[in-house]
Image (tube, rainbow, N blue to C red):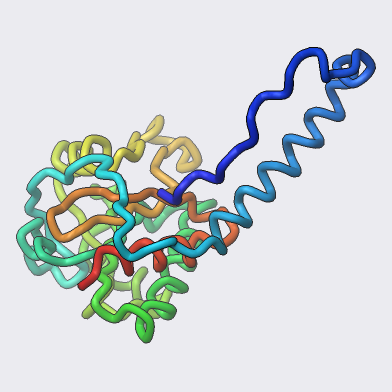
Amino acid sequence: MSIASPTTGPIPPQKLKAPLLKRPALWVSLLGVVLIGLIAWRATAARPSLKVELPVLSTVPAFAFVDQSGAPFNSEALTGKVWVANFIFTRCPNVCPKFTAKMGTLQDRSKTELPALGLVSFTVDPENDTPEVLAAYGQKFKADFDRWHFVRGERPELEKVIRQGMLQPMDPGDGKDLNTVVHGSYFALVDSKLQVRGVYRFTEPGSVDEVLRDARLLLP
C-alpha cells in the first residue's frame, strides 16, 4: 500500500459557519475533490528514501498448484522472488478481461524497468479453468509464460491462499450466474519471504505505477 497523504488538523467548531453546515452537498463535493487529489498523489509521489519500509500485511501459506503448462507450481518456486498476484477466471463476463489487461500492462512496463518481477494470476474457478484453458487465456493477453504464470489448485487450498494469504475475497457464487462469482480486484505485491507488502485496486489511476514503485523497494 502507498503511504497516506498528510492531513491538516481539525477545524475548531467556532470557525465553522452555520450556513455551510447546512449544505451537505457542498461537503460531498469537497470530499470528492480530496479523494481525487489523494489518488493522484499516491500515483505520483516519490518515495522519500529507499530505506522506506512497506508494511507486512499477511503471509502467503505454502501451496502446491499447477500452472498453464500443467507443470507443478508451488510456493517454493516463488520463495526468494518478488512477485505480483491477481485473481481472475476465464469465463468472467465483466471485470476479469480488464484486470488481466492491466496485468499485461504491468508485464510490459516491468520488462524493461524491473525484469526480475514475477507475475502470477490465480484462477478462482479451478473446476473449469484447466491448464489448457488457462494457457489459451494467457495467450490471448500475450502473456510471457517465463514471467507470468496462470495457476490453479484444489478449491480448499486456493481459498486458503487467496483469502488468508492474499486478503482477497473468493466465492463460487450461485453456480448459475457467472456474475455472482466473487474475487478480488486488487493486485497483491509479495516479497521474497512470501509476505504481502501491498495491495492496489487495479481500477485506480496510477495503480501500475504504484506497484512498480513499491516493488523497487523490495527488489535487490
